[in-house]
Length: 507
Picture 1 (spheres, one colour):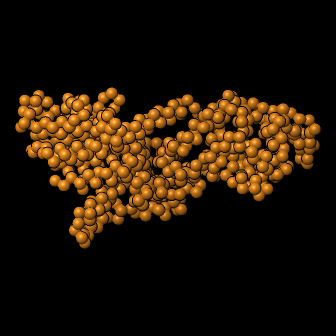
Picture 2: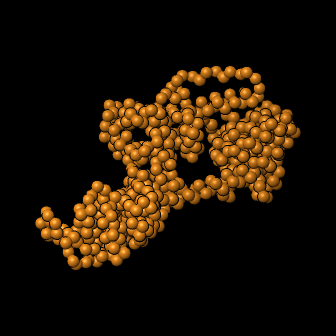
């Protein structure tokens, strides 16, 4: 057995892979192939216990609990001694016969390899042989492998612990705060919501920046409802396209006779929000003459109605939003510098949807539940429609996605939702993928080399993964969580598979 090509491949995987689900399975497969074993497990430390996490080389899709059994006694021995345990039916017959799991599996021999780093064991590789035993070369190989894989398993366990803690904190975040209407799981959005929760109860002004359709008003409302001002009004004013005089009146109110048509006193939006929050949407559009009066209100908490010489004190928190580049407008003299800095005491930036693509399936499911009005029918996207929704750039962001799903729900004549129900500009990327184009052509071999064979294997595996993912998501209407549960795949692994094939252009 030539150990070095297999070990070199293992090193490459360890250096290039950061998928804590896929990588151990790849490594275990290589170990079984190189050592001639019939099946194997990776047993991973979970707190104070060790649990079987991965299984390789079973011919069937489902594996019985009996077949999943392994000898915990041998695992404990490998962990405690930090030595490889080799046991065979022929050489160790009395002891072998006492191990119920080995008798049940029909194995002839077993190798248990501790995976350690820095004097601490993080798991074991457990491989079984059916008709032949584990030879000395197999022993040498697994010893070399153990030295390489211990550090990876340590880091994988640390990453898994961090992921679980992050998920716990996220659940706690949504449990303790009201983020109604906001659907997110992307780390950028979770970080943003954590900041919203942290600053919600402050009185400081907040400037929300983000492209059109990203949900700036939802974030502003979240700031209000999670603050001590929640019982008071949250008043919204869309400042775009309002001339200066009208905008000033809308903001601060006016007295009777202040201008033509002012036939009675009117309370402005600022006073209407007394004790609560005023949300100024598209604040960059405010006319220059009104900017100075808004600045005075922010500095002194005082307003003066149009046509009145009397000032009134108000207690209102201001949240402003814009999709424009305010610093550029400041430099060009179109927006007051002092007002800009007064508004951005706290600045929140909402990422565009194209930068949080992991939220798209979640949002699609959310909008589908909101807009589907056919009782008794379970809507589902075809693989082409799901691919189009996933790959679109969304210049209109979440609002564009919501409108696309609403359109599909209105135009649908049955539960199957295909690309013809989506807006035309979203269907350009929905050309039939590899699965729809028929079977892939057989690979051509010009060199008949090992590298060429490996490349063909990888291409075939990628094609199989693409077809599997398309069918799986089609069956479950694009719901990744539901697809993961039904298929038995780890949800994180499934998301990474989807992301990998999007990056490869595979749909």
